[in-house]
Length: 464
Image 1 (cartoon, rainbow, N blue to C red):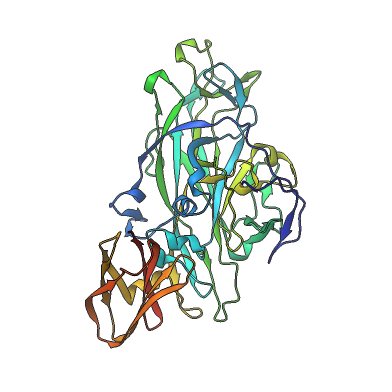
Image 2 (tube, helix red, strand yellow):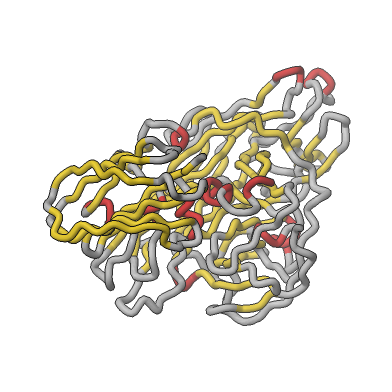
């Protein structure tokens, strides 16, 4: 069953206890998502980072889908409103107002859920220092207006603005709900939100993107779907990647005692179109036939994002790690509401919500002992596991960079060893290793190849 309504938060390693309540989001309107028009993370094409090809990204939604709550995720879109008075006109004529000011995510690269993705070797340990190279997220930027009156008989071009803020390490505080489910917030011990400007505060760095007419190289206009006469009832989103500022890094230590190895980013949209002119309120969404629009109705440009709601019976529970969606709700952007000020953990909503985000990191092994992580691929690599799914036999093709003692283990998803093979003093080269799986129960397992201090892993499915 979903977690019951909780009324308190308990501090963990950072921050003091704070009284807060869950947020009932079940009554909020949900906007239909047609899909992602361009998603490089679901294709074989590499995504570019600052003009350089990269190969490994962490897909947060992919990780969440591997959890017990993953089967209940449903995809929608939501919109970032810069003012509480922007109108949303639904297809039945009902007028609503936006609910979200800013969104983002805290990322924990130590999360065990990474072991269940297609890149299990990318799980880091508390010994891994790393740098955040790039971030990416699903977006839709709908530009209805390019010019507005300047008040002197002429017009001026409309320039909208997107702000991307970053936090790192100790700037992110760990907390937990009373049932032990963990979450994190930026700057848990200080105010991370400015009520006057309705903007994030206390961040490490912020990038500002000016959005003018047409494609701008990072974000371009995404037109809404008009399938089945739906007008603004369905949207195709896109995905954009952004090079992170220098210095968004997290340092581990040799003792492995620095537990707060987290990074985070959020994005906030401000339109160049005034929300209110006199008594005239601009319209964000207009889901009715445009022919029915009142004469002279002002439209606003808007920016949306990929939103996943947990509509299943099982709630999100993670008592060890801190992957946390961040939602700057309109209500908590003006004042403290239910104990939350500024960003609210996505798990705090009764319809737990997650933001489609991606992180690309590089591992720094100069501080402390290297652990299992991105650096492992350089020493030992699993080229293929075939067949997969397997029944009675599987062949593992691996590449060893240097001569080393090699151990091959098969573990279940609880980390329990099922079988193990040892190959001492193995020379460098490429090898084909047959494994007998006829006596192993059907299920999902990990093949782990360790060479010296380095390990590579790959998921294996065994069927009857």
